[in-house]
Length: 371
Image (cartoon, rainbow, N blue to C red; front, side, top):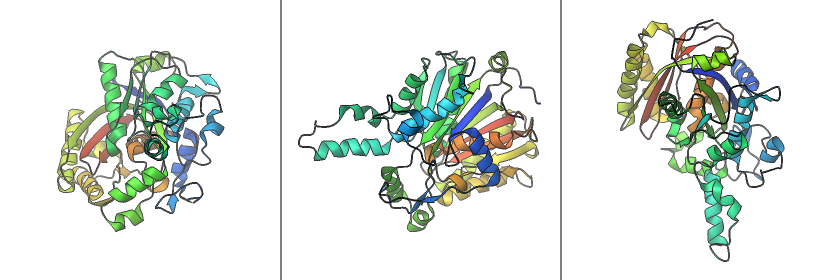
């Protein structure tokens, strides 16, 4: 097993709620078996422009979390709370070393677009604008999921919500690293969440560039979260870890034509700064964005890794476009594939490009075996 470099931040544990199921075991199994998750939408439950979507199976907030304190909890908050519950507990016991001083950095898009639209609609159709259910108002705030997650899991450390499109998961990881370097929190829980809803589906439909993109669109949902801590903290609590975070790099591309060059520059800078050669990259998890920007991403990776045999890892074609949670799922896909130890000590890339211009890359070194 590879030994973490002194001082390198460590992803010591991870979990997911995905269209494959409510825990990491189901995520790993679904990824390895390449199991498709798209289902036909129930028109009684969803008024969406799409016929199919990748939904977390049978997910109901009250059924999963119980009826206490969930009456007004929306779907995106329920997904986040559930993912963190599985991250923090094993065999019914809370993981050691994750106290109330732990930080939380959670990525999202707008929070819950459905909650925002439902609350706004209620203020318009009610007899008076203020005849709305006040218990639903917190769901309209972007940091609702992070705040509720902290309350549910007794986390009193720094609490931050990050929104940055498809690269949100990587931006959340970068923010968590900054919290650690600044001494704000030794241990940080981070990741990203995205819900499927009728509101999100219609927003996606109307913002797609053309009808061809709309026809190919397959939306998904879920949450991917992990524990970020120092190697010393992980060893104190007998966590061997899943991967070291060697570095991150971000840029901005004004259009899809410039995305290729911007991402290539980010990846080269990341490799050079860490003394990693292109031929040493074991795997790459690209964002697979739709349209020309996605093509630019693959072209950039081919430019940098020309002639090399890095494995391209993807889960979006199986669990759908999880948008704000997509790069977090890319990270966990690499961690899941590295669990068997075959890639122990090898480097892997996670890249992201977004039609709104955010470009990012992360370099990880895997630590084989189950953390």
